[in-house]
Amino acid sequence: MNTLPNDGLPPDANRRDSYGFREDAGAGEDTLRLIASLPAPEGLTDRVKAGLRMAPQPGRILMWLAPLRPAGGWIHTSWARGAAAAAIVCVVAGGGWRIYSHVQPGPYANGIVMPAPTAPPGSAFSTSGATHVPETLDGPVLTHHVAPASEVNVVEKAPAQPKAATGATAMKKKKVPRRATAPVQ
Amino acid sequence: MSASQTLMPFWMEIADRAVHDHARQHANDEALAALVEQYATTLYRVAFSVLRNASDAEDAVQEAFLRVLRHRDSLDEVRDTRVWLIRIVWNIVLDRKRRAKTRPETDDVDELARVLPANGLSAEQRAAAAQHHAHVLACVDQLPAKERQVLILSAFEELSSVEIAVVLDITESSVRSRLFRARNLMAELLKHPRSLR
Image (cartoon, rainbow over all chains, first blue to last red; front, side, top):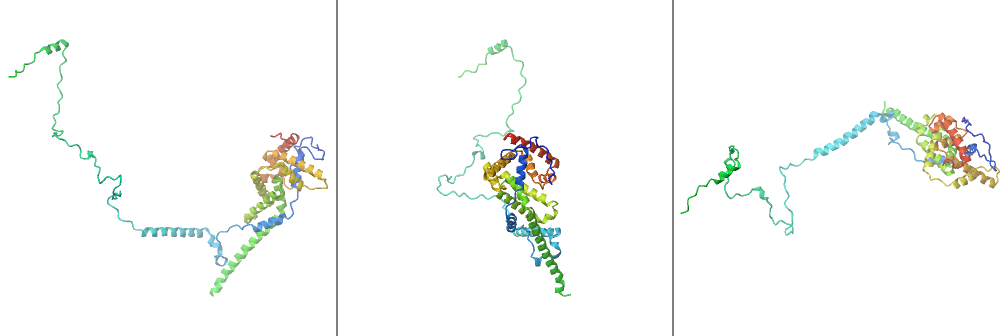
């Protein structure tokens, strides 16, 4: 029945060793054919059948008991399965809603209530009741009156000065005698 | 119409369905037993040609029929049962061969000496035959996987090249070209052992 071609064998296809075994390319196929024709061990089929009998049966999906199984097989139709799935969803959602509707939320707090300090008395790290108030809260205390910003004289812009005098003029100006002050009597 | 008369067809139908299921399961079991009876030997030889160990080959056959048992409901859809079974066991033995550690060559010689037919040979001749076949098989093992697989399957007289192609999931022309290469490589290996390495 094997229709495979026998080509591909080299021309020296009949070399044999001292025991009469072929030593050419056909030796491999001779050996493989010999192995392929070996008889199976005794009792193989019986052992295989026994193994199949002991094998676990394939699992089945929660079959109805025969007397209770609905006739017509409608229970296995897709719409019946869909209805069953919808019923399960309804039960789960209904249970969740029932729990949600029975839980009353407490009144909302209007402010944040800080807990009282729980440091034990005499603790080495206690503040001894002192509260830290930053000094910048009330600002620095002034000892004299300061006019408001609107009353402060605004320095007017000085008029344009004439061109600076030259060096000689400047020296002359320096020589201008000052008005003598009245002598102290 | 009384209630019992109304329920009677219902119960009758239930009973019929139960009987039908039981009969179908029984028929499947019978079909599976027939498959074991018919093909267990062929599958064993295929498994042994790859694994070269009697107990490993028997385990592979057992596993193949367990897989068939799992799909027994779809047995009717299989076109060629024999090739289908050979393909199952072929995949199993290749998987086992891949996972198994390489056995020393002496194990092959011992196993071959045990299983080869005596045919009136002397002890010396049997030992020489086992040695020779083990050497040839070692050369087969050196072939590339694709060529080796085709060569092994071609040794089965009952498998045509078309069926080998189905088992290996390749085309028939690929089977022929791989076989051609395998024979040339085997000739080279037997002339110059280890020349492929």
